[in-house]
Amino acid sequence: MTASNPPRDESLSHLDSTAHLMNSISTQLADRLRLVSPSGRRRPAPPALVLVAHGSRDPRALHTVRALMDRVRELRPGLPLHLGHIELNEPLLPDTLAALGDTSVVLVPLLLGRGYHVKQDIPEMAAAASARTRLAAPLGPHPLLVETLHARLVEAGWHTTMDDATRRTSAVILAGAGSRDPDSATDTRRTARLLAARLGVPVVPAYASAATPTVPAALQALAASGRDRVAVASYFTAPGRFATQCAEQAPWIASAPLGAHEAMARLILHRYDQNLATRSTEAA
Image (cartoon, rainbow, N blue to C red; front, top):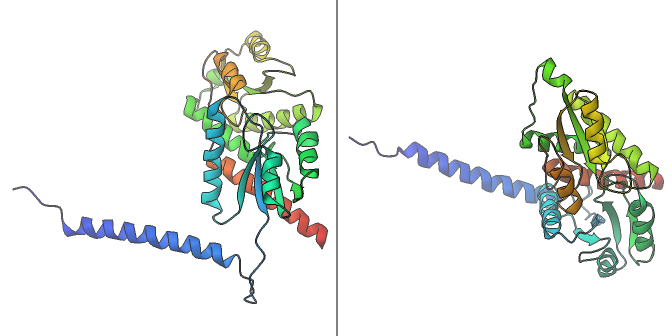
């Protein structure tokens, strides 16, 4: 005799659906309550968050950035969120700021350290706009970046546990774009140290352009020290020519770019909130 599906399954399914609906309602209600002060008056709308991406000729880059923005929206419903590019893709940052008019804006660079874009390009574009802009810190260095790098390495095949013999022959190259600005290299080295502490193996920064060592040079130096089980950790926010080039040089595994990982979305909101907190402190 074949048993039919018991009523209990339908009940559980109904409960799951109800729980999902209630969670959605709770999220929307909490979002609206943020706009109301304890006195019952409506709070002013929060400053818009403008995510500033570099731009790329690779169409995967724009797709990745938009997926990351969707993650941010999931974490902070109701927050005005916009995108502006420094170059190569639309919308360009000046156009995004022009469309926002005379509003309050926090610019969060989708960049991994200090460099020319953070110090020169973005401030100059912001100064030419009518919007009231504030520039948040770049994403790196930060533990949430390391969380993403670790997750991408594990996805690529990195073993979270290894014996001492394997550890002595293992290493990671943190492969980034490169910059002539020494502050950018300093920030990358700090990220490398944080990742090394997480993995328990040496992590060596290397670059695709504008800085040394290159990825092949770093690989050669590691091999000379007896470390030939080397992974390449992609220190790029999205796919592109340099990210692909670095991955192709990996002798073992190469991780995917940071992409739309949830930790990246949390980091973007952290930089936004951090900037607002600094503003409040300055006002006080």
